[in-house]
Image (cartoon, rainbow, N blue to C red):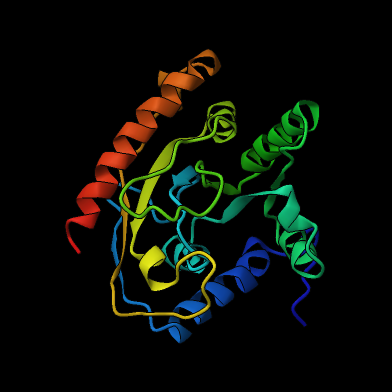
Length: 219
């Protein structure tokens, strides 16, 4: 049975089905994944911030960060999808309500508490899948607040070619391109205060967009 009680299971048991799903999806899709994790501890506790192009991003990232206990920060509407939404919530993924300011701040604080409990949040600051594969979309501020308030080291992650393999709105997979994943140098969040969140966002975007374009040059 796939259902696991998060209150009465080990971290390994709690993480098992998400990791198994990621591994199986990547294998069945025939994905070739080239990974450069730099100085990231493969079992470390972080906030990950990455770009988003395709539904394949999530299984790829589960496969790459197997032991980092990642959970994805997702918009509330995804949690309202029958069956799928319940699976997201039960698996510990993090719901952020963008509909109104008060609800949004409450959900951001809940995300911070989940991060402090041992989960490594994975944030897609573009807010949706990007269809312009030449550069990253502008970043939203909510993910910056989670990253800075959690106090965890921040790992920027850039990923290329999933948007070519399975573009937004398409169900057909062309697995000829190599998925490229690169972790950039870990950021100490104490270098920024919460008041610096706009600067943090701008610095992160500049760093990641530059690295993304360099990744594209590798084909």
